[in-house]
Amino acid sequence: MEGNARPSWELGSVRNAARLLKEFSRTDRELGVSELSRRLGLATSTVHRMLATLAAERFVERAPGGYRLGIALFELGASVGSHLDLHEAAMPVMATLRHTTGETVQLAVLDGMESVYIDRLESPHTVRIFSRVGTRLPATTTSTGKSLLAALEPEELDLRLAHWVPRRHTPFTIVDEATLRTRLREVAERGWAENREESRVGVVSVGAPVRGADGAVIAALSVAAPTDRAAAPALRRIRTGVVEAAAVISRRLGHVP
Image (cartoon, rainbow, N blue to C red; front, side, top):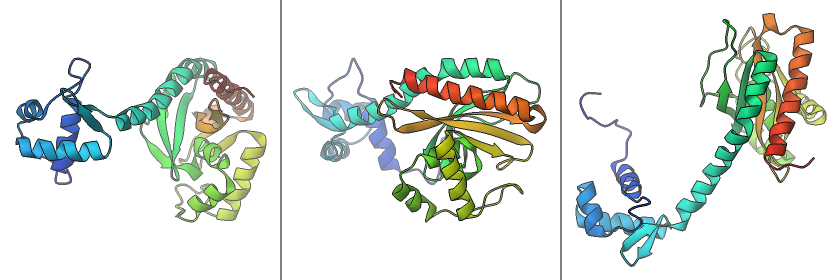
């Protein structure tokens, strides 16, 4: 890509709608068509059509001074707020868990059949497990993913597995649905999951579910470590720490067991 060229996949109309919405602020709560046209460098007729479309979807609404942000944006903001609350509740606990285990601590949510890592604290050891926030991994290969899948209602799990395309990432990856269902039942019964080199050779992890105030599982916490630092005694300590830390985060979110 050269100069200011836009990527070929970008939709100009969507980008302009986003630019329009971002013109509203605490100091500019209401804006008219002419002012938005001037700021965006777009024709007034184009801005008027954009506003009419956004108003139909409740992203903006009419106001004495022109338009203001609508209730749909508030509803979207509230859903983002739940993740911010999760971050605030989890981070101090994750920091303590990293200190006590000396290993990488991760927080993930479920998206389809993928674990999406939304928070991560890297091990202080020289040998680390490098990744980043936003990384996606097949849920069936991770301890966070198995914790989250095990918490689904049977009908929802059936629906997701109907579209599951197994892929062997290591010799230890589960690629058989019957075996996976057995493992998930075990996870649901005992309250924690493990990943024994299923997503990456040489790495193991233990995960446990995090519950919101209503008791629903909303995320999963895990500790990952290289196999040479995760012999049986160390893995037992990690497992205890993860389960206890997940319970603490759940309580911070308002969950009462």
